[in-house]
Image (cartoon, rainbow over all chains, first blue to last red):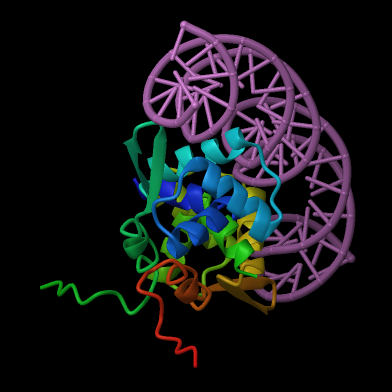
Length: 97
Length: 97
DNA sequence: TTGATAGGCAAGCAACGACTTGCCTATGGT
DNA sequence: ACCATAGGCAAGTCGTTGCTTGCCTATCAA
């Protein structure tokens, strides 16, 4: 389950996409493309970004909604909240009787 | 900096190694090898585990100390604490005056 | 209806990453 | 001194992945 989350976070471009969505939700594919080009000098093809979004979506980090010919993407931070506490000690108080 | 942390966490074997070190600190390379084989049925070569430990070490997730011919490994959770809060909204109150 | 815009699908390529094999160094016990 | 143990270094293999190119579908405006 969280396997996909770790793999999705492994790529720096995908993390930048998450940054952009954290700053402004509901962006379309083309918006994200131009943001990456403008603000981060990442000259990627539309398909490259589309594939990144697919990875983020299967990881549950991005949810998308279709409206007409547009597809808007929103950040979902919920999968992030458990993956790191896995190693943070001291372990959550789980009293073993 | 945290680039290496994300890449280190991307591999499931490395996450299992972190699990083992979270359970018991100060394990040597051979101890980790046998733990992976016994508890997780991961039949890896010593070199494979050694390379994984190197990745974890450059990421700062594992620190090692040499004692004689042994090299003991300890978990360091410090790099984990910032990487996720990066996208957790609402953004930390950073008053822009 | 025609054309422009927003997006999807699939094959191909080049680079990276996990793992192995083979050999070498160093420490410690007997 | 000897040999077994703990670990390191380097090259090679093979699957994965990030990205491109090419083509196709769907929605909206004129």
